[in-house]
Image (cartoon, rainbow, N blue to C red; front, top):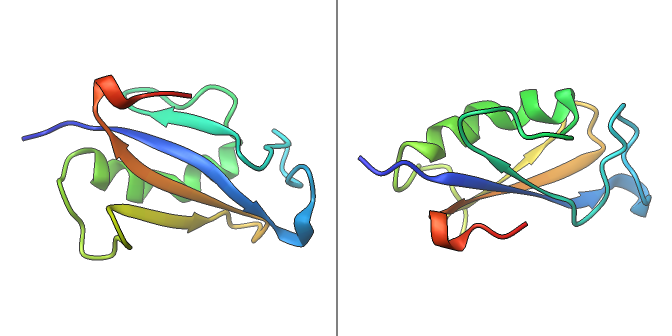
Length: 95
């Protein structure tokens, strides 16, 4: 079974704002890596939103709800940001 690192990138913020309204003030284009620990600097609300999908993607090659070339877009419960999740192998991880 493959174990992937999951690249998490803030794709959009509602109203074309520079920062989200959450406590961590995440920015468009900001990237995080999800693996064995909570990504440092990621807002806890956004983390709770991405966790189920990121965890499933980490341990599988394909999930039925993925879009396009193996990615999933997840919206924060605030409805403020969209985070794109994609699989990355060790040699592909760039933040």
